[in-house]
Length: 185
Image 1 (cartoon, rainbow, N blue to C red):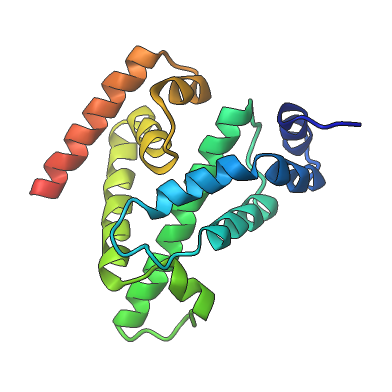
Image 2: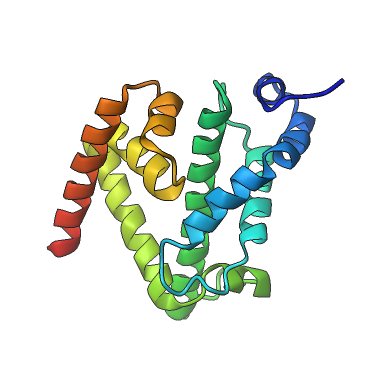
């Protein structure tokens, strides 16, 4: 039987973790694009391994199956958020090593994910701002994650979040303005 991404998302959402394998194979190119956009957001990601980020995303989603997934775009939005969290975790580890904390050892593969300390610091700062934004306006934060981290279009973001394209545009502009104002402080 031929599986479509929609059917596999439904199976995965219903608790079939094996459907995740097939789903990742079917939409690998889309995930690769999301991962590539993720790593391309900061200077210094030249050595980051996109495939490693996709693999880490798969493991994260396999271990911590999200609640109900509505559709392909929603799945990609969840994958984008997982990639953001993975990058933040590695940035935190890198910063801890910089401060001399030896509580967690970073493997060579992990070191490739976060190329330099400036990149790690930028990731942590963006994450801090997004946490603040999420408390202020959760929808704006989700729009920002989809657009910035997921590289999703206005239409894709609207579809994934079940809001209108006009709302996405307003939230995107408001989120960008708010984040920019915080960066300038």
